[in-house]
Length: 230
Image (cartoon, rainbow, N blue to C red; front, top):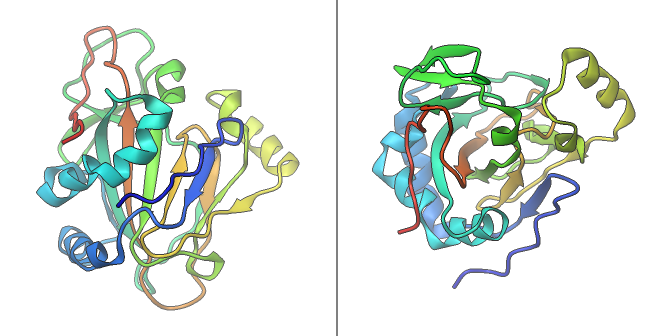
């Protein structure tokens, strides 16, 4: 049975779901993340794995995404990472601006380009970024001591930000710690300013970061992947 889903706070740009996944699903997902990472800190090509594709299409995940993006939305990427004593890094305030696409196409509004894990990544137009939604699923739970996500509420409404503007907003907006239990998740607009600190306690903080879109790209550029509902 899918638990009740809190309304996504459009003005804030994020919401926290405490019990997105049943606890009995977490061990297999954690083992999958460990296999994909093989001791490394992160992977950006998680949708190549069948279990993560199944997760992206699951009723539980779509129950929180569809009210925001609509029933025709699809997952277009999955990133997995694990913050441990051996891989314990801080992340400064930033926006998620790059998306994976099928091929490089010289199109107005797209760029810069880069290659990661054998795929092309590009920054699409701001209107595209504004209509994406990320679901960050915690497999171990997260709190300030484990370096959990911090966000600056409402900053996604300002569009793509310059470094100077990021610094201004960092000084003006009070951050919120996005604590979630194991099996919980943070829903977030990728343009929302977010950061994380180093963990101060030993352990794992495994996260599956799914990102969803609701429309095709433009000007001949195509998403690398599309995982719809089951």
